[in-house]
Amino acid sequence: MPIYLIWGDDGAAQDREIQKLQKTVLDPSWISTNLSRLDGSIPGQANQALEESRTPPLGRGGRLVIIQNSSFCNGCTSELTTSFLQTIELIPEASHLVLCNSTKPDGRLKTTKALIELKKTGLVVEKNFLLPTTWDTSGQKELVEKTANELGLQIEASAVTALVEAIGNDSSRLYMELQKLSLHSQIAGKTNEARTRITADSVNALIEGITTNSFAVGDALIEGKPIEAIALIDALLANGEPPLRLLATLTGQIRGLLWISLLEKQGETDVGTIAKAAGIANPKRVYVMRKKLNGKTPRIFLDQLSRLIEIEAAIKKGTSARNAFRDCLLIDPRFYPPK
Image (cartoon, rainbow, N blue to C red; front, side):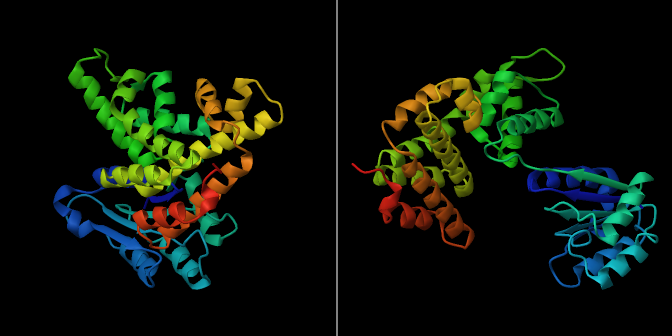
């Protein structure tokens, strides 16, 4: 009766973990019968998950019941708590219940406490997948290294830094780009080792261009060139660049400039100190970013960050990405430095 408690805001990593479970637990010929995917946010499906987890698998292999947005360890009602505590004792050995949520389990709940006790006996497996923040450079490096190891790749330290600068904390894109880089290295015959080695040169060759274009948008905004910025944004969106990822790049770029501006205003001159405070992986970038300040005050960058937040809110409320960028970037003069 293994129960898997999977939580965290890295949805892509959660999906990969679930795919591994499917391959381990299910017989391919009986997937349609023994695999259930339910959503705890839909009334009745949490109870349905408990009922199905009590059912032994049919045919070969095991049964896998996956419930997304699980409420069993987060805001569980008293009725659902009672049902859960009764059910976990009745789950057959070949049935597997997977509880997925984006937030950490609430340790005060009876359900969570029961799972913690079962975890000591090996009947519960807990895994968390947390994304580092956009300014947590060391955390982003750990994410790159962890993902590379998951794919069986060796990766140079310089390549880790290049990927952090290019992708940040976008776990889904990182996994995809590392797969591409692995294939690229194998085709190019650049490695004779047991594990494919990823170099900074291969990273820059394949993905630097996309990030450079994203940074070009930020440069245009900083210089007060909204038409040029919109043209670049349209081109990126047309090429499949996710709008929220573009926003993350712009936010990181402008936040870095804000930190540099504030620190220099306080008299800080050490590049290493500035880079660490600003979350810039490569201190040499500070020299380049300093030139973009060009006398601009911290207030300009604070206003820009405010507008980026409004764009993100508009997109998440359903406004199309193109309209959200246009409405906030072309209309509001606060986003541009004075001529």
